[in-house]
Length: 111
Image (cartoon, rainbow, N blue to C red):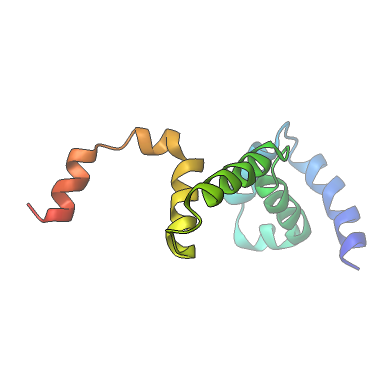
């Protein structure tokens, strides 16, 4: 039933609100009144899925590769929680590099 709903809703949405990207379709949906948005519930679900599914598996493969290297190197000295936190930091190192460590240290110490 949901597939048939999507098969009806998608052409209606494309006809009424032409868009060229998933991001644009998401912006259009967010701008619609709740009543109208409810008419395109399956389109909204599809857009949400498309926005979170990675285009490729490279990032996931890189993360697992990093985890294997870290786990081998630190296996004996680290618990699972700390290892998970370290992997997250390693995967998002570009964002961590942008942080001001001085400010973080001051907040931690309470100055």
